[in-house]
Amino acid sequence: MLSKNEQKKIRLLSEKKYRSKLGLFVAEGLKIVRELVEEGYIFESIFSSKPIGFAPYKLIDKASLKKVSYLTNPDSILGIFKIPKALNDIEIDKFSLALDSVSDPGNLGTIIRLSDWFGIKNIYCSLNTVDCYNPKVVQSSMGSIARVNCQYLDLATFLSKYNSTIYGANLDGLSHYDCSYDQKGILVLGNESHGISSHVNDEIDQFITIMSKADESGAESLNVASACAIMLGEIFRPQSLFKS
Amino acid sequence: MLSKNEQKKIRLLSEKKYRSKLGLFVAEGLKIVRELVEEGYIFESIFSSKPIGFAPYKLIDKASLKKVSYLTNPDSILGIFKIPKALNDIEIDKFSLALDSVSDPGNLGTIIRLSDWFGIKNIYCSLNTVDCYNPKVVQSSMGSIARVNCQYLDLATFLSKYNSTIYGANLDGLSHYDCSYDQKGILVLGNESHGISSHVNDEIDQFITIMSKADESGAESLNVASACAIMLGEIFRPQSLFKS
Image 1: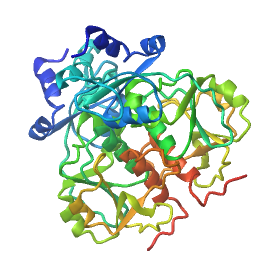
Image 2: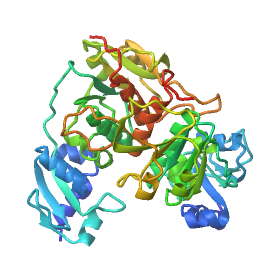
Image 3: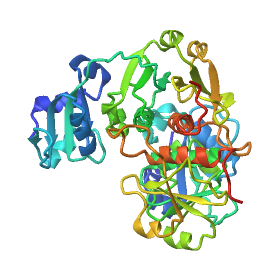
């Protein structure tokens, strides 16, 4: 059984204002909870309907878990974790990502998972980008949130001081196949509907575009996480003509 | 106002069995509904809370639309469309995709949108792959469902007769950067958790893998739609050494 207080806390933590106020977030699913624990995230409580070996936990029945879970098909485990102190770690010696007003939590989670796959440690997010501790972000990052650092800041100001090549994904730039990528560069991806905002656009050194292979009646644009995937695949290809 | 019957029909069409029984599906959002109409999809009804110019419609108030919408934030328009007759069009002169037990509707929708972008006309789906007229698939395809043909069939049998190179994405194949792609080939992508099933595996000519750039603690796998995006980006790169 979960106490009334525990139930209420989990419910409140679906909202950003309570996550910020309490400094906590919720993660569900064995893989995600275990990876957070293994990466040293401090937890307040872990509730599980099955025995686990990697952390102390409170055994609860499935029905209680279902009652508080954010998922349609709840997993066997839910943890309440402390939001780590913001790192404010500006690492310009490695390729990084910047997100301008990305609003869909599934997209941010997928981008975090992609970053983890390609060894990107830092994602710089505009202040209006969806919160990385949103339950759907945590879920779709599949544990990668434990290894990728999302920093929220005034993106235009940050980029204006960024001492490396700034790439921006848009629909009328250089073909992403034809660009030679600075390996210390940063790629800016914009909002799902409106792209990169004008004051961030001013900071871009090189716009790049994924060329469509369809005839004129094809898709007008790609999902931002798909665009991110294709561009990172190209940026990190071994044959890339990296500028030093 | 929507009649009780109309409301009930829209509610029922969220389920595959009623979509199959009635031969209808629901699409929401101006872009998606307009693209379906423009691509010649036959509609039974279009309900809109704003005037539209591209099709006859029934003007309804926002509250009525909100009541029947599948979306958390309903758009101004919802259409009931006829499911087109299955094409059973096997086109082996162009690169195609095959999906084995892909279960997440958002993933299928994203893969349909990617296919549309890269000019892929046919996706061959195993019988247990999520229905392409599932509302979340239609939604995340962003209208591309109107231009990409999803065929449901016994995938292993289909591939056993496929007269071209069959690629399969897995975690221990040839680096996707090192492969030269047959431009009449087909790429098989598997289930989100279990990958490609064993009887489909038997039909694969060449397994390919997206190499991780992270150290050992990085993400264990990629989302299937992200993997699809990265692989299509590579397969369709102009410099690809296509076998003729």
